[in-house]
Image (tube, rainbow, N blue to C red):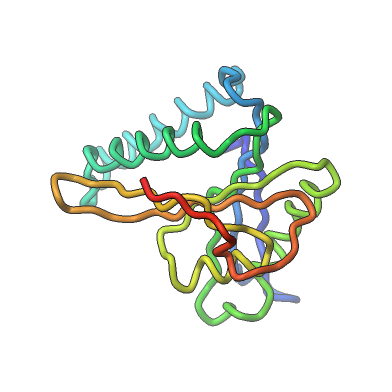
Length: 180
């Protein structure tokens, strides 16, 4: 994905990757995707199709993907009130042996510092409530919505969080949470 903001954390003096973060830059609310974003979306989609044809679907449930994308679109429509858009933390992965050592914090801070300087908000979706909301809360994110993605009674929850510019650390819960 060429339109993402990538940060890779490596062990000092080594090529060992400890963590990866990928953010999407803000896009004005309601704005159609740029040609670059549109082409990247198709490039990613074609790559996934090719991967699935070559290696198999690997348990991918296409119906559930669309249930999640629909819930995500509704949630973003409800929460994304800033017309300038949001920095979207799409992926954050830290190796288990590197967790709790500031690796994830450094990769998040690289973009939240930029967002603070611009007066921009940040957004993320977590697949786990505990301990993730507390971890993200330390970086100023606050839980805004508990998205339920229900596939005929088999449901999962995804936790949507927003970070205001220059946010202070907290527990990630804040005073407000909507459940879809």
